[in-house]
Image 1 (tube, one colour):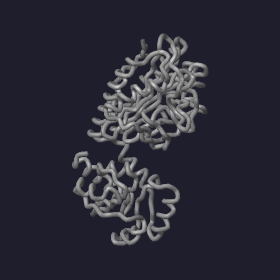
Image 2: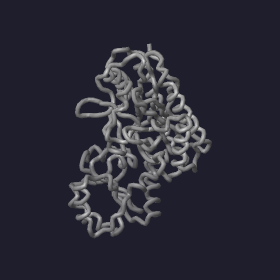
Image 3: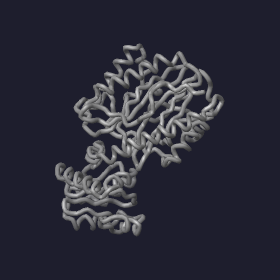
Image 4: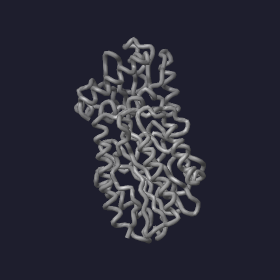
Length: 384
C-alpha cells in the first residue's frame, strides 16, 4: 500500500474519532490494522488526535523495518492500563469483533477505569467506500478470475468429479496469486468458492450464503465427490483475489442443454440487469431487494428465490477485503448506496429436483450508476 493511501485512511479515522467524541482508538483486528497500515501484525494500532503508533507482539523487528510509523513492543494485555493512563484519555474506541468472548471479558476488566465505545461501525463506514487503489485491485481480481475460468472450463468433462473440476479452477486461480482462502465477515468457512452440480447445490449449510453443497466430511459446503452429468446445471460461484481484495461472481454451465433451468436463468438475468440499471447513490438497499423479489414473483418463482434451506433474505452484499462486507442488500437494510461502495448482486433460484440457478456480478457504485468489476460473459456456458 502506498504511503499516501495509508496517510489518507489514518486521517479519515482521526476525523471519525473526533466526530464520535473518542479521545483514543485501539485497533486490534488484524484485517483492520492491514487496512490502515498495510501491515500484518499481532498487536494493535493506537490512534489519538496527536499520535499514531503500532504496538507489536509479532513480528516486531520485521515491522520496524517496514514502516515509518513508531513501533513499540507489546508484551500483552496486562500493560494496557498503565500505557493508556499516559495518554490522559477516558473515552476509548475498540472493536468488539477483534476478540473471543473470554479475551473481551478480560480486556473489559483491565480497562474498567475507562469508558469503552465500539469502533466496528465507525471503521465499516470507512471501509465501505473504496479508494481508487482498492477499486483498481478489485478490477484486476475480476480479470484474473476470468482468466482462470477460461483455463479451467476447457478441461471440464462429463463424469469428472465436482472436486476435480473445482481443483482445476483453483489451480488456475492459485497460479494467478489467489491465496486459496476467502475471508468472511460472517465467519463462515470458505476456500475459493462453490462449484456445484444438479441438486447438490440445494444441500443447505448453517451459513447465510447463496447456495450449499455437501463439500467433504468435516468441511461442509462446495464441491464434493459427485460426478458431473450431462443435462444438469453446473453453478460456479467463485471469488477473484488481488492484493488483499476480492470480487464475487457466479456463472452457469452444463454439458448439453438444460431446458428446465432456462426460465430460472432468464429470471435471474432480468433481476440482475434491472438492479444494475436502478441502483444509484442514495437508493436504500431494501428497495433493491424488494424490486428483485417483485420480479421473481412476476415470473411465478418467488417460492424458489434465495431459498437456501429456509428463505435467505438477501440478494447482495458488499465486497472488499472480505467477501461479504456491509452493506447487505436485504429487506431490513436501511443503509443507502453511496458512491464508491462495491456490491455483489446474486439473484438465485433454488429449485427442487433441479438445483441452484443464478448469476452474480460485482459492481462499483458511481454517480452514473453501477459499473461492473467482474468481466466474464454472462451467457450460459455450454461445455463440450
